[in-house]
Amino acid sequence: MSTVASLLGCRPNVCVDEVAEILQDRGTHYDNASGQAWELAGQVLRYMKTLGILDRILNTSYSFAWFIILVKLIRIAQDPNHIDSWLDIGGYAKLAYDRLTKEQGK
Image (cartoon, rainbow, N blue to C red):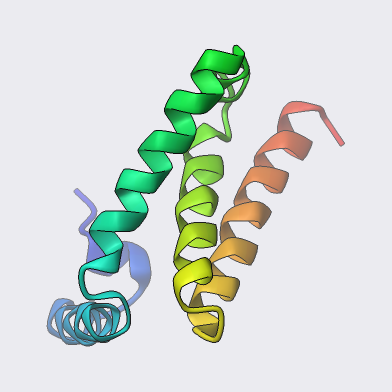
């Protein structure tokens, strides 16, 4: 059985320290804004549903990446200079791209 630490390629105690540091950093940068980002993302999703376009995204293999990118964009609106958010978007976009190219046999 794989642990998160082994999947990440690090020892458990090192990963715990790194995760704690990241969470502390996020708390400093976003504070209550994190909850606000999720709330705003929910509002965007509800609006997309009224337009009839939400199902096209949710019924895809990349829907999770799409949703997280949405949340990251909202966070960037709150702090556009936080470099990690830009990097995260690139990472999730790459995951979606890789999945699509695999599905389409390209």
